[in-house]
Image (cartoon, rainbow, N blue to C red; front, side):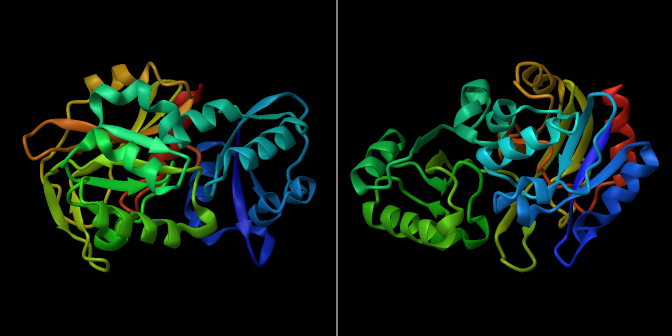
Length: 296
């Protein structure tokens, strides 16, 4: 089994510094590691991107650990590695299933905030998309990311029926995302979550959230989502989320969960495990050891 990491922008034979600790842990756990050029990949130069990936004698499973890719970019990586006898753990459809919220919403809708979306960025389309929320507070994001560190200006809308505020926040979100906007707009009902602390830089309120990694439908790891704040003895009951994990159309993915102020736990979103970050609090050696065990 192989782990494919992004290389350093300055040296294609060195790993991206943010993934250096992960690559050491992956090798220690017994994975073979390769480096690819993220810059060449997203520029469409797949052969150049993969020039340091060796052809394997037999078909083997590979896991990409790197920066987020669009579905088209991931498909190019998948096909390029397949030509070298490395089959990424998630095919392009499975990647998109967890990477783009609208593609997996039907799997988690009973356990996650009410959500709508639109690919049409006109005012009328946006008003139609948010009409279901009436006067409820909502947040805006795209199919993958929000501007949560610009909470007041480009994320949180206190009243979905306040057209002026809705327009202001949505336009600022679109402006900040720019060319990085993923597909369209997603609107979600805002839920009151249990407070953890204020972010040390953005001052955004952080809440008690956890990231669950699953591989082959087995729970690999449960990690504090935030590296700041005292979680205390807070621990969720995982049985419900394990049952949901069995229905997800992916072989390696994350479920981010959060505790509401009323004590109930909800799913915030899913993510493809290959592009989901490990919080700084993670025991990286243990993570890769448990990942290897889950894949055997």
